[in-house]
Amino acid sequence: MSNDSNNIITNPTSRDGDADASSSTTATNNPSPSPLVAAVGASWPLDGELSLEWIHHIMSALDWSSRNLPPSAFPSVFPVPVFDALVLTASKILHKEPNCLQIETLDSDSTVVVVGDLHGQLHDLLFLLKDAGFPAQNRIFVFNGDYVDRGAWGLETFLLLLAWKVFLPHRVFLLRGNHESKYCTSVYGFEKEVLTKYGDKGKHVYRKCLGCFEGLPLASIIAGRVYTAHGGLFRSIPVTPSKRSKGKKNRRISLNPEPNTLCLGSLEELSKARRSVLDPPWEGLNLIPGDVLWSDPSMSPGLSPNKERGIGLLWGPDCTEEFLNKFKLKLIIRSHEGPDAREKRPGLAGMDEGYTIDHDVESGKLITLFSAPDYPQFQPTEERYENKGAYVVLKPPDFDNPEFHSFEAITPRPKVNPYYDYEDVIDSDEDLDLESMVTSF
Image (cartoon, rainbow, N blue to C red; front, side, top):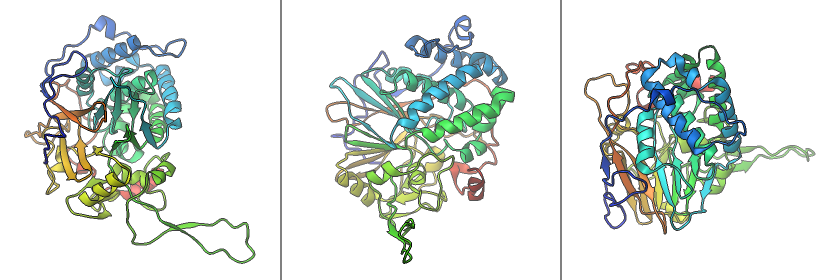
């Protein structure tokens, strides 16, 4: 892992809010809120306007219920009408946002917090929010996706982030991860989690979540300097007009991709991709969403199909340099790979600290950021990865000099049963069942 002390600050001396200033924080024995306060079920405000007090009540209620109530009691904490109102309001906001968010209205006292995979680890998210400082007018959050699956509190995690999005729509930005899809949630636990928690209303809740997933933007550009996305870079889709038959003036020109051609796509192509799909396709013309959500960096030069995953791309340091240089960027911050995935990637650093610097090129750096410590929550062996999670803070004037904040998992976690067969399920999202993805549209 490269470490350039002129550009990478790993031991900041201060941070926003009241949190400890050390760069690696131990998170243990987080006290539960008062049950008299937390056990009161949420109600939707009569005027539809969320308040900071409402958000904090939800955080306390979700934390308390995860420790004290069985999953089937979740509707008493978050009733279906409240769920419906929140998801409808959030979906309207999300679906209006562009594929690639331009986060530009940054003041001289603003900071931007970038967060990686969370995977249903609610208590670690609660700690992260407190440690980094809650979202505010001068503290912007960009979440890189993978809010659900594997961990036992994906629903709570997603709903909490939607609440923050509705409360501060121009300060909290939620990007899509590869697990915000029908296929992944049917394999890695989120679907079963929702059905367990909402019972006979579970299918309704799950469908609403899938619809919301479709509205999540794919990427962001922060201050014109930093590109963030869940997986990373994407291909260009070269097209050629098919020949028109004579006398068929009104016949529509069909577009076909050039065979055996792989080159990096443009931000304009990204802006035009169709993201409203339950599962991003791995073939056809709409490949950019799948690339953005599933691709991985490599130490080998060039752009090639990601055969390990069966979808997306592998890109080398030369591609990182090309992308940064072409769009006048300094950083790429992506997520998508935890410690289990990284132990199988020769040449790339492990995820022990919650982040890695994968490419250090002339124009800037490529960072992988993972915010779920001690991941995955359910592991089939006694020996655990015990990785830290991390988040990145970007500060003015240029917002391109990342401060890394690593933290350990909240312990002990509440005892809960997994919602998927973690001993036999496909590891690290590899070797996808593409037929299942076809039938899930």
